[in-house]
Each structure stands twice: as C-alpha cells, then as structure tokens.
Image (cartoon, rainbow, N blue to C red; front, side):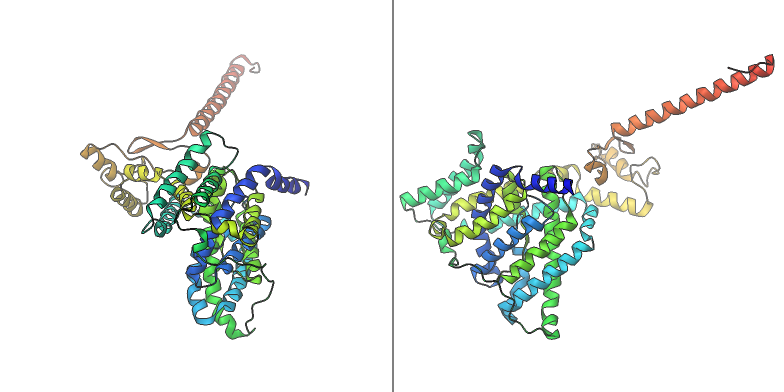
Amino acid sequence: MKTTITSYKREWFSNIRGDVLSGIVVALALIPEAIGFSVIAGVDPKVGLFASFAIACVSAFAGGRPGMISAATAATAVLMVTLVKEHGLEYLFAATLLMGLFQIAAGFLKLGRVMRFVSRSVITGFVNALAILIFMAQLPELIGVPHLTYAMIAAGLGIIYLFPYVTKAVPSPLVAIAVLTAVDFWTGMDVRTVGDLGALPSSLPIFALPQVPLTFETLQIIFPYSVALAAVGLLESLLTAQIVDDMTDTTSNKSQECIGQGASNIASGLIGGMGGCAMIGQSVINVTSGGRGRLSTFVAGAFLLFLILVLDDLVRIIPMAALVAVMIMVSVGTFSWRSILDLRRNPPALLRRDAGNRRHHGRHPRSREGRPGRGASVGGVLRRKGRPPLPCPLDARRERKGAHLSCRRPDLLRLDRGFHRRVRLRRAVGKGRHRRRRGASVGHHRSRRTGQGGA
C-alpha cells in the first residue's frame, strides 16, 4: 500500500513545472481540434469542448498511462454522425454512457494484455498513418489563405525548433503561440483566428442524465454504436499508450487504462459531452513539451475549461497559424522516418516471397535447416543477382529487451552477444564436469591396480 501511494505521488508531483507548462500548451492546442471534431459529429462546439475537459481530467486520476492526453477525437466523432442525424443529441449521450460501461468491463476482463501481441510493424504503421492524417487536417488552413499566414507559420516553426537552443525552461510551442498572438494583436493582420471557428460556451456544464426512454428499443438503437465506439476508442488508446511508453522508456497498465477510458466517457456523457479516447498528436505535444506525469493531463483539461469560460476573449484572437505550426511540428515528430529506410532494406516483393517460403516449408528461409533451392531460395536469388543479403527479421521479444539479431550469411543466424556468452558458459561448465568425471575414473583405476583408494 505504501509503495502504491509513493508511486502515485511520484506520478503527480515529480515534475510539477514541466507538467503545468506542457498542460497549458496542450490546452491551447485542444480548442481548435475539439471544435473541429464537434463539427464532424454534427453537434454544437461546446459538446466537444466539454467532452475534452471531462475526459482529460478524469483520465488523469483513473488512467493507467501518466502523461497521455485523452479528449474528443476524430476517430470517435466519425462514428457518431449517423446516430446524431437520425435520433438526436440525447441518444449520443446515452451511447457515450454505454460506451464507458463496455470499456470498464474490458478493463476488468484484462483485455489490455492483448497489446503484447501487437507487432512493432503494426504500431509503426499506426503512427505513420496518424502523422499523415494530422498533417492533412491542417491543409484547410494552408489553402486559399492570405500570404501572411504562410509567413506566420514559418515564423512559428522557426521559434519551435530554434528556441530550445536558447532555453528549455519554457516549452517552445507555448512561446510560439504567445509571440504570434501578440504580433497579430498589435499589428492587426487579417488572418484566421480561433474565434472564426465557432462560438465558445459561456457557462459551466450541467450534470444530467440523458433524456431518453429507458426501454429495450433505446438499447437496440445505441448498442451497436456503443460497441463500435468502445472498440475504436480502446484500440486507439492502447496503441497511443504503447507509443508513449516507447517515447518515455516507461511502462503502463493497459487494463487500468481501459477502466480509465470508460470512467472518462461516462463523465463526459453525464455533463453533455461526446465520447473520446487518447490523442496521439496531443500526447506527443505533451511529451515533447516536458510533460511526464498525471498532472499534465489534469492541467490540460482544467485549463481548457478556464480558457473557454474566463479567457474566452483572449482565446478568440489566437491566430490559427500558430496552432497549425504546432500541429505540423507534431506531424513531423510523430512520423517514423526510420521506417522508410527499413522499406529500402526490405523490399516488399522479397518480403512477400520470404513469407511464402516460411508458410510453405515451415522454416525460416535462412535457417540452417533450409534446403538449397527451397528454404534458402531468397538467399540464392540475392547471391545470383549480386545484391547484399537482407537483414534477418527482428524478433519482437528480443527487440524489447535490447537484443540484436544480424546475419553474417543469408543462411545462418548470428545471435546476440548475450546468447554467445551463455553458450560459452554452458560449454565451460560441461568441460569442468567432464574433467571431474575423468579424474574420478583415473583415480578409480589406480585404486584397483594398487589396492588403495583414489584421491
């Protein structure tokens, strides 16, 4: 119990300054995205803003991944369009509540453990796809806009990438937003601002149950939407948690994260918000800005509500160019550029042929048991064409432990140094036993010849 309390305090108060500053940056970046996702779902902007506030604050306490940001997302907003259009907003709130119950049940069933079976290539593809989608979401702010917008975006990117060379005490995205907002306010440039996206709420959210009839017919309507929302939300949240684990070199409780996502969505539905899940873009902003603990997630949600209710006049004049620069930075930082080099080293055609050989012959094509012309056909083709051999596939479990697999020849595997060290140790132990047995046998024969016991 004492260890749990100590670890919980460490997750909250070990990085107070970094968590507070990064949470402020995330809150500023959440406003346009929450409004945009509300538009996608066909609801009022306050539905997405209240959902982002509730999901972020509750997941800070109940989630299993410190430093990860959860809010209203496009992945869940797309699934809500038909429900809102055909049945109304109250049915959306009811579906969000049922979605949270399904996610809590998944957490108690320990379904978060299935993330251990997701391969590294799937996570890489997920990250790259999200990076591309984040960049494409900024295209409306880059097409058909005044030329000053491009200058402000370039200035914002310059501040984001160059300011860390001056000091890292303050996150560079926060500096870029503040500087560009001040420049826009004092010069009066004609650029698009946050206020142009839609009206911000002017009152606190109200706690209330969805106004829907509690009948079996209502359950039939919301059940398929809730199942789809719960599955998509958990999938994106668990993949994002794994990405944040890799970025921070820490571990997280995936089953607890399922429970945290469910509790967050229930809270969102009770205050008139839409369903949501973890956000890869905002999580990357949080981590790169110095956020590591639960406090950063809580500050992001609480400061978001403070911005839209108290500082709404200031929020309305924030230029969209500043937020676009931040999201472009997130897109560039999220994309796994190393995967392009991996594709060059492992051409898709050869990989498909490689997989076909394993499927038909039941062995790795470069293993010692592979027969020439069958299992080792890929190596033979490479040698005939004079191309360098492909590197052997990395074993996911060894890769997580830091081990390395490489190929000296196409048909032989050279394992990591730790494996060779263990082999040498076993051989040394075996030789020692053999010497002891041989010494005992010599002494035994000597005792039989002399009539004396062997030493």
